[in-house]
Image (tube, rainbow, N blue to C red):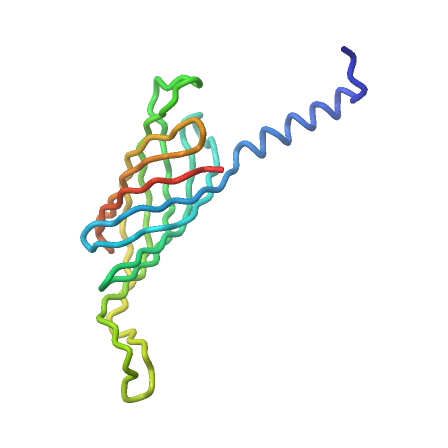
Length: 164
């Protein structure tokens, strides 16, 4: 069947589709241990870069707990392990990257302090750390991963997420 679309236009369309496939967004949620937190966040995915299995995944995450609240910025690089075929349901990956986090630890009260403020920023810390990641990605976009942060706000997180 003959197409009415000229060949240069089809070529541009194919190039645009290739570029769009290189970028994505995703969401994640799970639990953090020590301190115990409910975690949620969002990230972007850029790649492949340098190699077919390497992707850059910057993101933000929030952790809410009884005593601790965290906000983190992650600059992770993921590497899909070799030997994974396109038809594979689950593709295992590893990753690492710097983490920059604010953490606030306190016991909150409903009573204002002497100045009428309900918030206490006396226990807020900024820390830099390094993430280590192991996970598996399903071909439909879902992923399961364990992320551990060394140094900084040390925490181990079990996460489930979805890449759009």
